[in-house]
Amino acid sequence: AKPKIIVAGATAYPRAIDFAAFGEVAKACGALLMVDMSHIAGLVAGEQHMSPAPYAGVITSTTHKTLRGPRGAMALCRSEHAEALDKAVFPGTQGGPHLHTIAGKAVAFGEAMTAGFADYARRIVENAAVLAEALSAGGLRLVSGGTDNHLILADCGSKGVSGLKAQNALGGAGIVTNRNTIPWDTRSAYVTSGLRLGTPALTSRGMGPDEMRRVAAWILRVLDDPDGEGVREAVCAEVAEFARAFPVPGITGRAPVVA
Image (cartoon, rainbow, N blue to C red; front, side, top):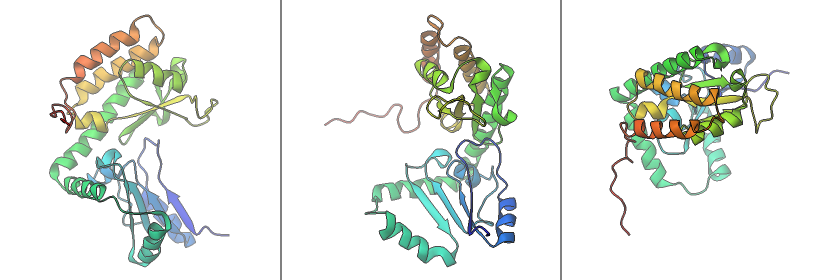
C-alpha cells in the first residue's frame, strides 16, 4: 500500500530539511506532502532556510518561535484543500477566535516582510553556528556535529551528566535550556541525555558572535562542575550583570501597570 500523506518537520533537528526531496518522494507515490515548519518559519521568512511552499500541499506552523509572534499557530494549503481544512479547523477543532492573538499575528507577519527581519534571521543562524563551534571546542558533543539553523542539540553524556541534570544546573546559573532526548538515548524521556538550546531570543536582544562565545563559556563552566561549591551562584551573578546590557524588547524599561 502507498502512503496517502507524508509528513515532514522536526522539533529538535539542527540541520536543514530538504523539502524538495520530500516533494519528489510524495509526487512519486501520489501522496500529499504536509510540512510542519513551526521551528523554522522565521528562517523561511528570512530566506535562511528552504521554503516548503513550492512542494507541500499543506503547511502548518506555530507563530512564535523563530517567527517571533504571539503564541499561536497557522495553517496554509493549496486551494484544493481549503474547504476541508476550513471545516477541520471550525467547527472541527477550534472555538471562538482570539482576536487579540490574530492582531498580534498580523503584526508579526508584517515584521517578517521587512529587511530588518531578514537580518534577524541571518544573525540567528550566524549566532547558532558560533555557539555550536564554541561548545564543541569545549568538549561538548553535538548531535550531527553542529547546526545549520537556529538550534543546537547537545549530548550531555560527553560531560558525564544527564540532560535533566544539565538543564537544572544551568537553570540555577540563570541560563534557560531544555532537556531533550537524542538518537539512541538510553535514558528516559524525562531524564534524557541531551540538551536543546537556540539563539532566537538572544539574537532579538542584540547579541552577536562575541556574546555567543561568552554564553558558551558559562555553559561549559557549569557543565564541567555542575555541583561545584558556588559555581552556579557565581555564573548566575555574571549572567545577570551581562544581561542588563541587552534589554528584552517590549519588556525591559516598560512602565509598571498601576491598578
